[in-house]
Length: 51
Image 1 (cartoon, one colour):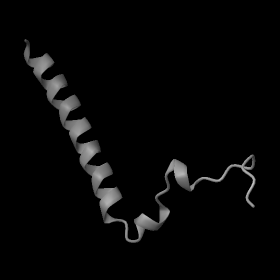
Image 2: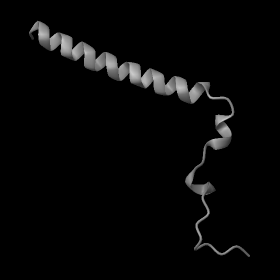
Image 3: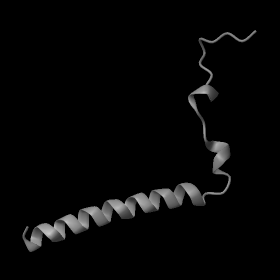
Image 4: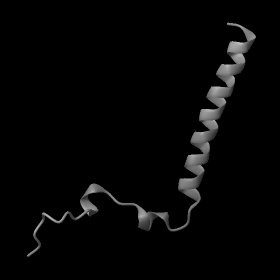
């Protein structure tokens, strides 16, 4: 592989690794984020009739 190929590969892998690390940091570092997490079981659709 040429030097240019190594540079492009290093930049792309490094960029994606940095983006992943930033996303994980943002998810972990936000205080009280657990109150904002929802699953499909938490969503109530209007077609469900509650008695």
